[in-house]
Image (cartoon, rainbow, N blue to C red; front, side):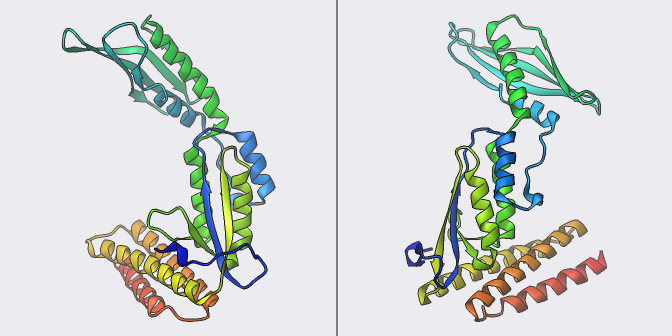
Length: 299
């Protein structure tokens, strides 16, 4: 996609098709209090609020955070910490810290299968540890686990923040201008939600979102028509491929049906903006919807 042909400027009062949006999300943890304040100030609808952090999820992330090779030891052996599930019930989750030691001289592997026991109690929502190996790096790993558990209980990671942004993008009818993403076209009808998203992202530490109005010109119209048509045709082709693959569960058919309706809404939206048709896309969607409705009746 030749982005240089998509005309944009900073005049927000002129005639425009929509907005360009691009953003960056930091992987660093964002304190829950900061995220909640940013959300409140942005005025985003409540459905986009990041869910409360579950202690068991903080436990799982904290255990995974201590995996990896141990460096800086005064020996030639290669030592790696692994975390393995042992058992879990509705009341308790237990993982073992496993130490793998590769002996440089002996050409062999040794394992301490339970250097430490890392436990989570579902009932009282607390962690507990049992240290079984006296080596210093094991104690360091356990302390890191405990510290990260407390940290993850009160902060969100980059993936959590990206999920929120993607949820809003879906409702913005955002169309990527490149297959790899990065820059999105947002129709002008959704600019209020767009402004709320930009305010929210800007309130998170290390994160930023940018917008730029897109002028209504002949080249811009051609570009928008091509981008939206390609997106719709690609999605419809993917849905047809799934349906041709054989028996499709009812739940998946329902999901595909909702996807096709989303395509139809976006096509209709941009046709309204451009005041012109986008070929047979609407008809194609209607025929595909009818096919899926008939399939649901046979399940």
